Image (cartoon, rainbow, N blue to C red):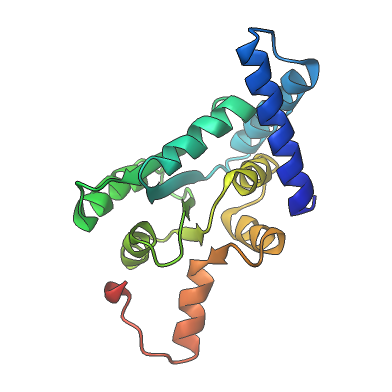
Length: 196
């Protein structure tokens, strides 16, 4: 599915859902069908033991908004959480909050972290934690891409495959940080991940 198509679909779903809520109507048949298909795919994925934890990290409440939007559009999301950085917090407190979410992962469970801005404070916190935690990290997340990622997870793709597919969908707006850091090391570019 092309990124533009996914964007249009997600916008239509959100508008239809909001209108249905505004006018206090029952969900439309296609909304119920999409939710049922998503839940079924997620259950099949979980039964095969391939489930991964997704952690949304952003400035302010953007990550919470993404989480709530996905729950509204696709239904309840298991193994997905969010952490926000607020003006009264420092980077150390943010990293502590992120590690709380990482520790919820079961042994062998992949962790995919999605951040809002390349080189923003949440991005830098994750890069620092990547020295300690084996996580996948995409930055530049938005509503249509998160929807695609959740559907790919539900269809059985692992974190590496999801990163590759997401880069194809949004080459100019999303970066795979794990590959970015590996490329820096391979090119022998001096970089200290603690400087991020």
